Structures are given as C-alpha cells and as structure tokens.
Length: 188
Length: 188
DNA sequence: ACCTGAACACCGTTCAAGT
DNA sequence: ACCTGAACACCGTTCAAGT
Image 1: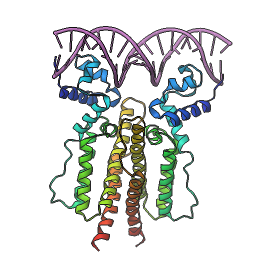
Image 2: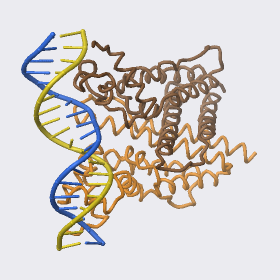
Image 3: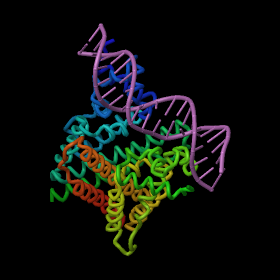
Image 4: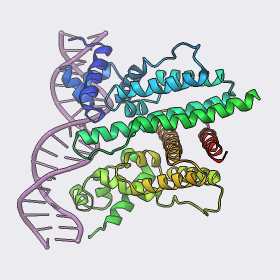
C-alpha cells in the first residue's frame, strides 16, 4: 500500500488525539494503517524515535512572535504558546517529556527562551536558569493537568478542583519576577 | 510463604535500585518473591497503587529541619533534600512523578514548602506559586538527569556534558530571588 | 490471610523472505 | 522501497479455587 513516514506520523497523532498516550502502541498504529507491526520499523528505528518525531510535530508551531516585544513579555508569550501547544493534544506534555531525547523543537524553544532573557540583559548563565525554570514549570504542570484529565475521563478519579491555568500564571509570574530582578542588577 | 505488604514493597524497591523503573514489573516482583503474579493483587489493588506506596517510601525522609532557619534558607534545604532523596534511588524522580496520584509524602512536602514561604511573609497565593515552581523544577530536572543516566548505562547515548547540579542550583536561585522579591513587597 | 493455576488481552522488536 | 509472517520474550489483570 506504500505508506510514507508521514502517514505513520499522522496516524499516530490521530490515535494520540483520540485516545491518549497509553493507547499509542506500535501495534495499534500498524492496525490503523492495515499493515503488520513490523512494517513500521522500516520508517522508524523504534518506538522512541516515533515519539520524538511526534513531539517535534506537536511543538513545531511554537516560535517567537515579533522581536519588538519587551523581553519579559516575550518570555511570557513563549511559555503560554508552549503550554497551549501541549494542551492541544491529549497527553501532549507527557509526550514531549518522553520524546525529549534528541528533539529538535525542544532545543529550538529553549533557544528562544534564552534569547529573550539575554535581550533583557541577563548573563548567559542567568538566561539558562530562566530557560530551565520556565521549561520545567510548563512541562511538569501540564503533565499533572493532562494526567488528571485522563484519570477523570476513565472515571479513575473525581474532579480535583485545581485551577491549573491559575497555578501556571502564578508560577510563571514568580519566575519572571526573579528574571527581572536579575536584569536590574545588571543595569544598575 | 506468607509475604507481607512490606515484603512486596522492599522487593520492589530492590528491583528499582538495581535495574530501574523499566524493569519494575509486577511479574518480576512476584518472581523475586517466589510467588505467582496474581498473588501481589492481594496486597495492592494494582501496579499504580504499588508505585504510589513506593514513591511515599522514597520521600519519607524529606522533612523540614530546625524551623529557626531563615525561611528562604529553609526553602533551599527542602528543595535540596527532595532532590537528594530522588537521586538516592534509580529513576526516583520518574517514580514520584508517576505515583503522584494520591501520594501522602508528596502533599506533605508541598505543605512544608508553603509553610516556609509563609514564614517569609508571602501571601497564601504567592506561597503556592513558590511551591509549584520549586516542585516542578526539582522533579523535572531530576527526571532528565536520571533518564540520561539510564540511557548512558544502556549505551543508548554518550555523556551529555550537562552539569545538572549546577542547573538545579541556578534555577532554584532564580526562583528564590522571585520569592524574596515578593517578601519585600509585603514588608515595605 | 494469602496464594495457585489458568486464562485473557495485550506489548516492542527481530529477521528472513517476499514484491 | 516497503511489506509479510512468524516468532521471541515479555506485559497487567481477573477470577475461581485452594489451604
């Protein structure tokens, strides 16, 4: 039937959207493509490679907007866009976390964060700290949110009552306060 | 043979220490106990429950030291102790992240973080943001470190050249700067 | 109180061989 | 270039039945 690598990817993305990461097996992707499981290994060396490619796909749209925006506002937007991209796909955050080994988009977004922080006058080292704190905050909190959502969907848990959007906004504001503090120390 | 719940837990912990989370299967725990896999389900409702209990075990020792310590120093220590507890066991961070649903120790440590921040004069909301930012930083960065360590152990990747201790210290310092900034706004 | 035996419905991956 | 067929070595979980 001659499926391409992209056919495999979009089939996998469809399963992810409809059922989540737990149901994203090589055998299931193969079944939806009407192909034997072993056929997938012509396109991807292993499942890990498929996940990494999928994570890159999910993050592909996250890119800096106008660079005329204030540096701290830019950081805020990047974090928000990253979070939105993760939330757009079931278990998106867990996927990106799992596919981190060798991800291109991951490195790119990290680069944008560092860039923005450096525009604020932060040292390379401080800018790295900003990237680390923001990245882990977004990924970690979104994993928690999507894990809970899946549990609730399966009836394995009731509503948590947590407001993840607010937790995210508050955590990010705190980190940005730290970043602005570092910026001032440099301008003084 | 009459194994207790604790026997199951310590056997599981042993497998975790020696081989990591990927090798921690119900069937393997059962085999080490010389018991059928189904026997484990008398002690734990499912694997998730075992992982949650295991995570609680790993975090049990993380508790605040003297409360006469300065609040920001206390936050720093708690974060450091949490990280040390995670690093003490193979894949400890991933385990805690996976066993988060219903973890008692997890809630307790979050409480200590909030407590320390409140001693600094932070509002309940700001203290929550401090807890969120620190928790996600520690868990997320330690997952990355231990995932890389496992990959290197399996020969699936070469050394990354990253200094995780330094990344952790820098990220934490940034968050604490943000926290102190919030404290000052309140004292003024 | 704790476990066996047997089964069910799955996994990822390899590899020779086919077209 | 892309896939089949068959196999290997695994999973978590359920449930009637045993002691």
